Length: 238
Image (cartoon, rainbow, N blue to C red):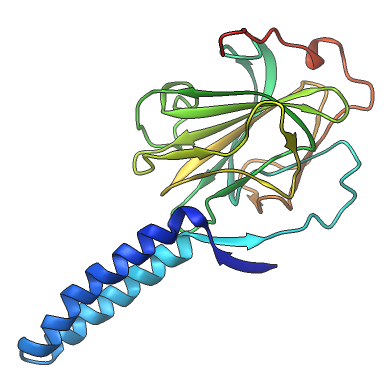
């Protein structure tokens, strides 16, 4: 896996570098004793490396057979919710909700969970509760992407902002191809992604498992999907 800096972080890293340089240069020139500028520089380097780590963007290639009805994790993180629930906003039916929480130390790029076609993209304004809380899925600022997988079933992915994350970026557009090796979006500074699966999907992970975006297989879709899991009425004005 090759790693580069995500485009969402380029401007932030450049601006942060100049801010830290403006703080540290006068400190080394005018402040004594020496332990004070040394402390400034040490804290600055640690801060910059943490932000640099946050915006890393590894190039990943799914090692398995992508032609299977496979669902992969959209993000790096830990599975914090796995349950049957009713999805009221788009699908309006019972589904399996699989939620992965990201800390500030995880890669925050988001991958498509399935191969298929993007049918709908919708942004929802909301609160900024801790993304670890279950109610953040329906109350927080969020972006929803509906994908028709290659087997015909509809998979819903929801990017959720957290208490610190205040910006969700979604690259997916209706009508575009979804590929599990491509980025679906990016969330800045600590957040969560929910994947809503059909009830007949075979879940391959459990609560507490660590996932790698674009790599970890989290579910298998049915070879004989039901008609309900393949169709949802999409409003024309979305």
